[in-house]
Image (cartoon, rainbow, N blue to C red; front, side):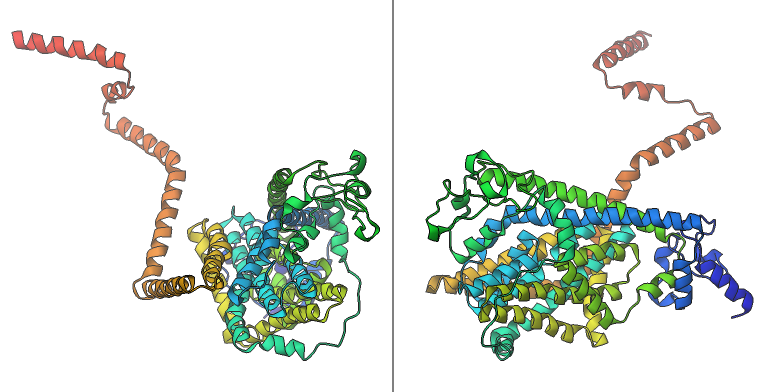
Length: 614
């Protein structure tokens, strides 16, 4: 490269942040580089992006004048503002989900069951309460209390691994306004789903046959586990106080139902606060049964919504509330949290777009393109800090949608999040003071490590989840209904179908077993027939053609008013040019009034009579 070209490149790649430029395409630049916000931003493939130097990255990041630093400061403050309330909305959505689905989730995990049912129950419980950390902690507590066996706990945490990815898939739908962003965001979210599903597809039958996770972790167990302390991450300490003033879910209800201490949520209602005072001491403090304390006399009673020692009772807490009241409060908070999540997501995306406007893709990808192992470590570290893999992947998903993080970089970050979320279970096992509980937590860790070893190090295996995620992302271009349909089918319809089939075999009767066997054969044959139709009878092409027709029809209906106005204007011009008279009678007839039709009809009859007389 000549000196002049090098100078042009440096100048082009370090365009000041927020500077408007008339050049909006790489075709118009001497260097041929694409900048963030270009009209042809989506046309550049990753293999076409050149390699920048760290000096160029440092210059683009740190070399600015006073005005530009002021804009960067304002943008950073706005980004932190939206990010904080984005995290608050996720925390509030998780609390609302626990209030709405806590009773059902606790009932699902209450008994020992067969492997398939255990897997499905773990997934459904996590999807209902929107937190794999909570599900894993409950599973560890159940094993520690000997309510379920270690083997059942292993299958439950496998299912929890699948259910945890529903949150960031929901978050990706917040970028539906832009087709290109939705494609990238949905691919970035579903790469987590596909990896977890592929890992379960291989390791679940392997565990059923060989119990390798059980034997591996059993050999590593100490003789005893010391009683530890519960640890709360710094992000939780920052976000939870604000969200806790709106709604705070009572996790003890889920655990008590799962362990069999109570039969249903009705045992916690109506909510009772001593002397009608709504604070933690009078409402949520627990009775000491050994000392003979009674509910309503010495302590209060709370349901699915509880109070906090520090922040007190939340806004949606109500003394005397019943189960229906708390469920309504949870539903309202769920709607509010989704609204807040979408607003904050849009604000965060807008701020990031403005901040990155004019930045070269070479600079962006150089800054974000880290080694896969380092990406796994970063993902694990972030998840340990926030104590939630859902939060980690949900925060990263908008960056994938913007194109700041490539799909190849998102995969190791999500794998690290999978490892980081196992730390929560390990901490819960330390508090449990039970060797079996520690074994389940270790099984969760080695399950994720095993999945990483299978699907990530070898390039040909790594391409499987990446290609699957890209295919799902491209499907959103044809229809915006793909994400909600995907969530409903993958996280609810298929698991419920499997749970229903497995429940037939749990009845331990000849009739149900035979019925279940026939249904399983029917399902297998149906799946085989579908695969044959999909692959051999052009089922894929037919589905894509159907989606294309639907998209074309929607686009046509959107532009129909403008098209009609355009046609009318052209017809008027044509009439003026040819001198043809306007069809006034047709226009009068289309007015559709009965009186007008009756007035025209007698005139026509008189003319006909006169012609006949002549």
